[in-house]
Image (tube, rainbow, N blue to C red):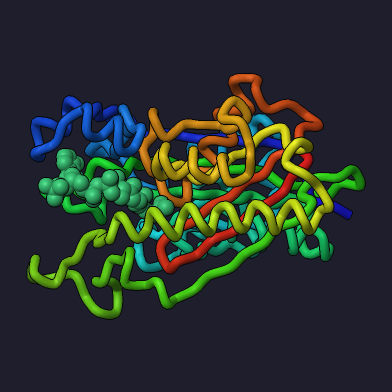
Length: 321
Ligand code: ACO
């Protein structure tokens, strides 16, 4: 028994912010951002939007593509580091919005790897008969934890959401998932304030994304190369058998370096970082949905999804779409 993706969806917030817009906010330039990161635009929350709105939009699109109604859904997992509120968790809030009832609904936190973690957990539910129709979401509003006066970080991130619907199938679907993490890298990328430490009251309690960009870059490239190989070896496959690489969209140079390590031509890599920036847990499902909806990703294609993020966390999913 496999779990198979029967629908994909995504949703972006309303405010498109270009590099030229950022030039007016911090000491940066379109040229610096494009050459160092590949990013041209990103979408940020408008005044009346929230993470939950983004997640809801993505799930509705995925359910529509899958032809699935609320009564069928029996599992909701949301990967996010920027939940709407402390509780109810994002899964329960989504459940309520979508009129889905009486099924497990939770969020998990693995920074940019959140969607791949969520997909792996849902895959195990389905394969073991614990669920028959799972909604898996990566939804994130990094704009709420970025210091908009810090040019080293604020130019990198965007908001967004992506989702898939999974169902059991005797035909191959998700062939394997691999998850890992190593907390020893915690000081390279973090936000130190939070619910129990406190961030209300004084601004000095509040921390934003802190990052040692060069170090993150090196470990990301090394790790993404390694996990791709682990996934291929596990399935006794070679790079030639992959139709598409769908990597975490943090930086075009990280994507290029990871693809090169894998000997994967860039024509076979789904790239959305130029349009969306780094949307953390939303990045992989947003890229997947983009590729599906513009017709590049077709039924029967073999996809390698891979992600890397704060923690550090990392993971992959090798999929027959
Ligand atoms: N505009 C203009 N100049 C800038 C900016 C900016 N936005 N940000 C930094 N600079 C300056 C620096 O101050 C520095 O100036 P100096 O030489 O006078 O000291 C110069 O540009 C070079 O800075 P570096 O940090 O060495 O630039 P680098 O080439 O390493 O690029 C970057 C920085 C883009 C952050 C890169 O290290 C990177 O992408 N790292 C990965 C980080 C990442 O993707 N994090 C996201 C979360 S983790 C994940 O999703 C994988």
